[in-house]
Length: 266
Image (cartoon, rainbow, N blue to C red; front, side, top):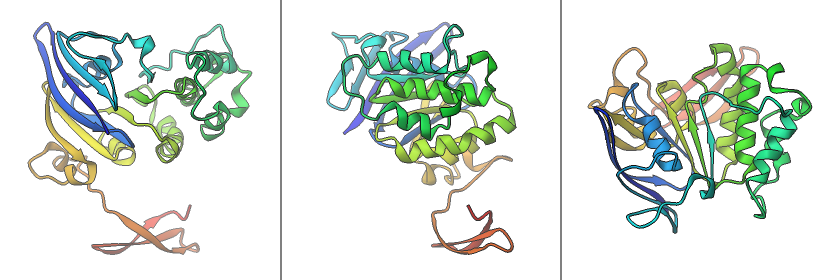
């Protein structure tokens, strides 16, 4: 099963025209420069905007076609925006309870306590949002979205408002989510480093069109695509931990292209 999305959007002089099949497991990164249509695509999937022409199938359930349009509040999804947008009149626990109410009478797929533990916010539950750091606010926002027991989690550049130190702080939590979530995540970013670390599948957008889509390891090394060029060019190499050099804080990794050492032993 997959997520099928076909949209035609006109916004002034900008046009979005996409036809996608997204895996229904793992993290799909939506990557492209500013103005390429990343947020427009995400809002169409969420039902926040209604395109002139649109089709959206989530597994065996159609959320949009020529005759129907399921409104956002009836779509089983969670949305994490660039800004956490927590409710200032509620403490952290109150924000999480609001998210849990969105699940209605459905049995939550995963107990809220698991997300609280996984995102490391157990010690923040009685605090107000204005007393939290940017990274803490974003972790609470993610937990609130997951509390609704969504079938699909949408994340629109959730690290863009954080400085480098806060990004480093939150990355391990996002990587833990990647391992634990059973449902698909669509993650929008303009940072190659973010998508390299978090995504399994990648969609490259350029001027409102899909330039390429596929497994991230394959796309990052295609010489005909922009990810393989410039100062931020990266490649992904799959390997297995083969040993630790704790005295030197190094880890040896074996891969198909040979063995190498990386810094750290955690």
